[in-house]
Image 1 (cartoon, rainbow, N blue to C red):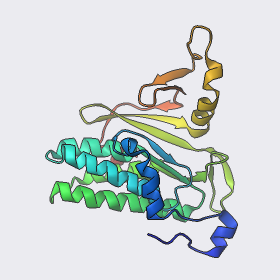
Image 2 (spheres, rainbow, N blue to C red):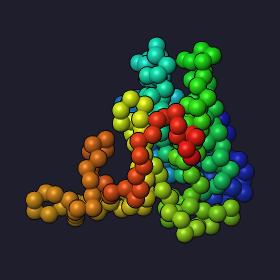
Image 3 (cartoon, rainbow, N blue to C red):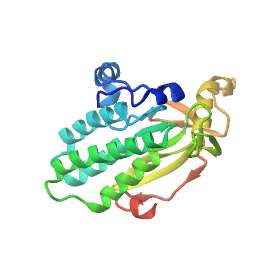
Length: 230
């Protein structure tokens, strides 16, 4: 995983240089508290094959295991939160696929240690589904999905927010990435003298900021049914 360049052609064509482990850890140590907060969301706009996201996931799962490892149900609920809080975009489809595979295999390894032979297949289907939906092949500059030739499509990058509601029930809401980022840039101009934002915004407690309303919402679903419903 220390290899930083796959080929000279990819460096020339796409500026692709991977961050090595030492720099990854040094940078994440600067936000250590967020890495250890299970529900803290991370977006890597040029995720490559997952150097940053894999390390964040490792740190989060260590916290989950330490706090909830004695109960399989509690572990699964909070491990779901940890996985679903990670998002990535990469221009190259092979990188996006490698990142998904890496995160899923990493999760299986940690989950198997806690489950001790009692791995829940439905839960693993859910984890795979969430990773597939959270790691996308797209252009983080135009905020559009890309086709096989790395050309922008007309489809915007859309991410799902996954939030535990009650028990094993999850609330899913979809957001356009461009609207979320544009909203953060223009948030201050949307406040009137009363200090209230425009009506199409809502306050997100997890990020302590106003965000655009979701483009789609889904009924509450069990974490054990998300994979089957996808």
